[in-house]
Image (cartoon, rainbow, N blue to C red):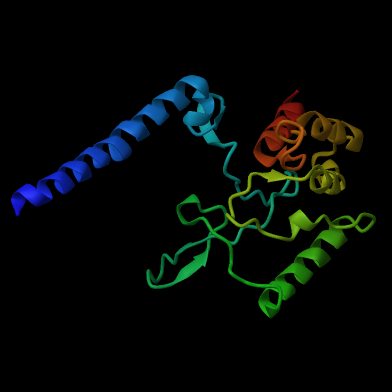
Length: 201
């Protein structure tokens, strides 16, 4: 019997070593050589300190900063580990809210967000990505339209020219991959860092 199962055990061990060890190590090594910044998490530093990643959004709530998309991620309730609480951009628990188009809770949340944004900038239509969460809940980017929508609020909060902020947005827009895939976008963290740099000059 051992003679009959020995080939199966040998194949199992060989495939485990190849697909579970050799292949991941080879891909990690190749990625580190070809895309060193991305392989290390696309980390962003300020004054020598890591403050985030270009791949994972952060919750900005102050009026002087660009705000990202809503995030539906949750985390454990500190008061009761059997419950969860809203924890925006929680990379340890990536996911959407599972609320569908017929959900009253989702409709009410979107309606409230639209009203808040309309009060902030009544002269422009509210971009959809400012009121809808991404499937991962970690999206670091917003559309150029969503960034432009927030210009009046940021200009008031920072006492800056709206034209200067629009120029920063225009310089921060990333186009479609290979000119075909995806949509033009702006990374919220890098744009907010550009705002801080401009304010310190």
